[in-house]
Image 1 (cartoon, rainbow, N blue to C red):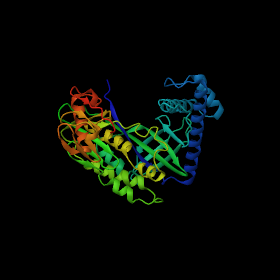
Image 2: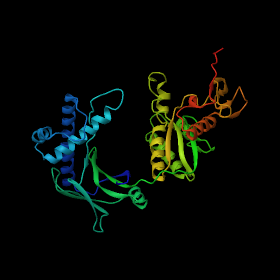
Image 3: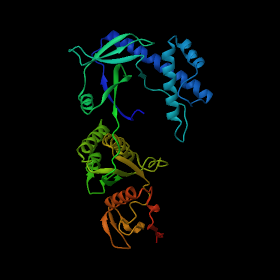
Image 4: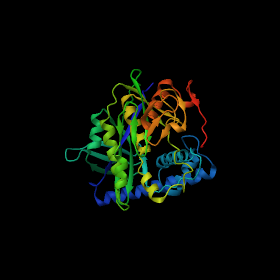
Length: 364
């Protein structure tokens, strides 16, 4: 049985290609986009988004309509079904509309070879519906870093366009390491103002809130600045001796909040990079064999880490002072330690703790 693999991608802009080759590639991407949207409309009308492959009669229908090859029509039908499955996994089901022109090209359509010394690599489009072209490109520091970490270039690539610019996603993979069985459990509490607090006292992105407050309304690339700072701090974090990270599951934290906050606050809240933090954390942990366990966020900041009693009077802003046992701590650090406890016990929420007691307190 083949060992599971980790996949990453590195984007490279094909600026070295001449105008004629770029024009042919852009026309090919337009064809792929139209084929995918045609199959999406067809499958949506049939309410057919199951299965991985499409029957040959449907594939030939798309082939004849767009005057292309059976192999390309089959590949675009497969990607159309993937788009439908991805869009229909949520609560609100809508037919996907492809706003961007991208195509995943398997070894039937494209391959990457080493360059001849002038260029680092060469992208060969080999037919089967794709134009027969050779497009050189140079490597980037990001791709070099992945290759230095043991990743290998796959046979599959992703081609797309950004206005009139062509880009190529070079997909790389390597075997996934075995999960760590020894080490400690760490809890991470997420907070818009306080950043990310670890149960051992370490802080990530603690200055992000002040930086967000300083952004001007029309200042551009502010989201990228926050992501770069967060990514920089994550790379510097020491993950040695950790086997499991327990973190709050805040996927639906903004659900049903429309109209609750002002426009200014919503603009600033959009810089809260929780989702990006989760993606990067899971990628780093996957490469190092660390398990990431998502926990229910309810009552983690109102429950005392010492006596496990929950009382909303114990939480006052950024301070936590238990009204039952007198335990005092930073509110976010107390929540992170509760998440660490859930990770050690293998439980989803604090209400599952054997010693947990919920004390109902009236507003008066």
